[in-house]
Length: 353
Image (tube, rainbow, N blue to C red; front, side, top):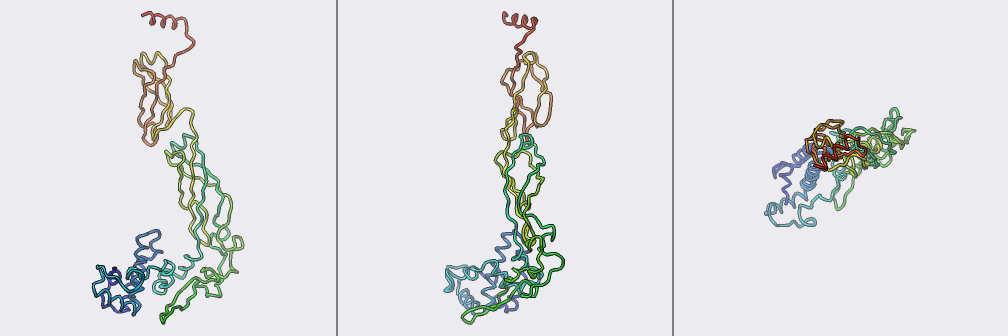
């Protein structure tokens, strides 16, 4: 069983005003608008509402105190209220319920556009595309242009959904909120909800941008330059944050997911971060030793061949692969099909022993 007094940081004899003040302070600290994307803060915010939901109502607090003083906290006793005890109190409320029900306690700290941001603004959709890269670009990385069709921010209103100074919604007076009193069995409470007439924006429908109709975005094809990380593999999907479809009414943009295909290379082959290729070595160099040129994905270099090198031997060239990997050169001894008289004579002498 949870200790609601400990959660709010107050004494068990705290007055209703002290409980309200403690909840307001902590709710503002863990408010989702101040902690975007923070799951731990959101869980704490809901837990605070759960505690306040019980302790702020005299009849619920009295029942909770009677139960908890009898050893319920930390023990195995179960409350007669709810599905399975006081752990269930208030847990049925969604985040939107909490924000609406208690907005009067902390709404002013987030400005008059709080409900506008949560109800009118909508995040953009994630977009998907596929991209085929040549082997070298996939190995070394670089910039590549792609064409994407989707929602983009309306240039006429800069994504605001209106041009100039909008007129306030006559239904809510421009606040974007409507307050109503509801309840049952003698328990009443005030609920603040987004205005249905303006969808929480606080703006008159007549002031909407003529170009986008008030959505703040429109659909068209755009060309993007994206960064390809070095070493991206065939079949990988790149997630580009904020490069997807534009949000409506100022909402955040979605993400772009790019599935990568890599074209095979006629010379190079990849294994992890190592690159493999064949190195042609003249037979005389293989026998006597010497130097031969060789091309890697990093550029042209000179490879030293030790005397007596056999065909099929693999030479490891450090740092010539992907992201610090190596280039593995397999020696392929090259024998000329057209020999001069002198070369033929020398080979015959060698063969004779």
